[in-house]
Image (cartoon, rainbow, N blue to C red; front, side, top):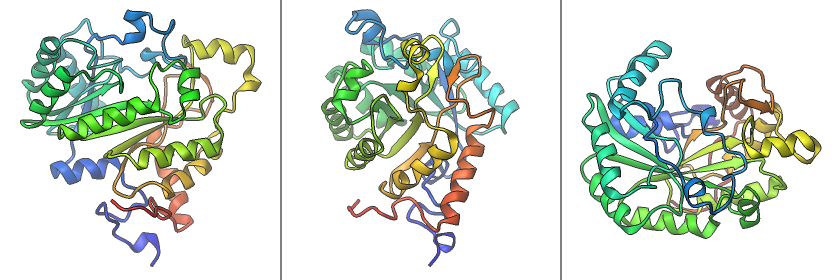
Length: 321
């Protein structure tokens, strides 16, 4: 039967398991994520472990305009509700998304104050925490486990790649084993989680990227977020790109969508895809230049491509879930 006529295991006929469906399946209605900046940092910046931090990082490129640590968590959330209501449509429930930098890189008392302030805001039904695999001490995991018993809690881990040589090259400061251990610790504590992966990192081949996909799909995760490598103004990688652009194999939009087809086909069908690509404001983005096309339009193009080819997420998955 063609994919367009199927209701897939995730509950609709779309050719991939979207984050919208994942949230709908959990809450029974639309819920809007609201990014907040808690003013936390990361080990790179405070411990000097690896000078300059991750080579591709410029946190300002993805922080919404209302999102600044000079404002309280409550103020950011209130402004976020207004921002999204004007841009999209107003939701009835919200998730506070602690996005900037490493949001478990603080003492438990400080984290408790931040997260509890968010939960006290009207309409906030849970918390999403973006962090690193190597910043989950036992005391923090114990608190998160307790928090997960009384509210919706989700952790997003920046894994980026399964290849240690790549992780070293981009100065991540952790290896793939750190991600595997973090997934085990969080799932043992009853906390759902997702991974963030970057496609097109320096010197990675398509075969290496597919290996990363298989590695991630073999872990006990609930979502994946994909991000094409972008050269951002202010990031260390920008200087290398400006000197030797020929050393970078950046995806064009059409090539990227073609690349994603086997990635999605080999992904477990029960893993929701939160995002297939990233976007950054033009003032930060040096390359690749895909024009002003927005992420939602790129997603629609990709879904049309999958439907036209009568393929779907998990079509080539041979494991169990």
